[in-house]
Length: 319
Image 1 (cartoon, rainbow, N blue to C red):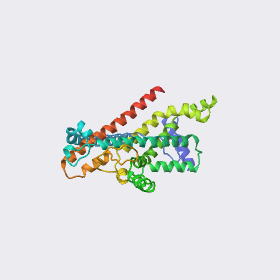
Image 2 (image 1 turned 90 degrees about the vertical axis):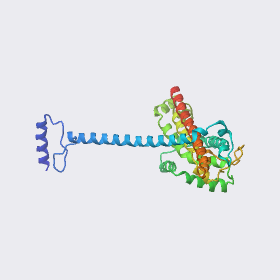
Image 3 (image 1 turned 135 degrees about the vertical axis):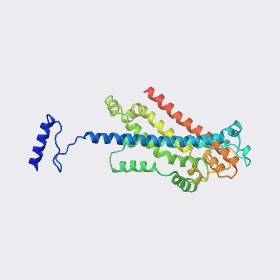
């Protein structure tokens, strides 16, 4: 067999002018690692087909999203007014507003950010900069990645058992905020890890060469470079938290609140719960109010996403 390979390769090399395509040993002894013209055309055809498939999937998603937005806007736009934003819920649809739900959402959003941001960033820095590269560290990182994909209702059950009942926090803003902080904490940790890991190692080595300690190198060199990525991931995680209804429903947040919360231990409601309550009612007028509340919630989410983009661009320009 070896003689056949040698002879076949030599003949092909002389025939093609210089032996630029060396033969590869195979079953037949004349296989080449270089694709032929037919193989290249097939690969280009598959690539074009895949691009067309992705374009079709994108178009379907955009059309469905546009249809939903048009339907919500048509039903709820005419109910958007200052009275709608500044009124309390009512049994009469014409007088129902979202003031307690909007204030409760802002309370929950602020406390969730206060709990999740420092813990998530500190955990990400420790895992990248201080933790040893051993099985325990890899096990922790694997579990954090898995926790990021756990359904939100599971965190609601955890918050009900651990915070509402065991810690006796009741149906308070604090219990809801801690539950949502647990929900988005894995996302913030992963975003912080990726942002810190993306900083070139030469930055750290340069700081060490000038006599800086590890903390000084992280504080003055690594964190400023990683801050745009950390802020972007955190704000996007908070955008997810403010739109979640399942964990808050699970911990027993109220659906009808005729007062404004004044502290972290007060009972509360939020925009997703208010929307869920109105949609579940049989009156069509409440459905239109729910559509208007959805528009307000979308405005809050778009504001947060815009803030993420502005912060990222601002700190990127500084760097």
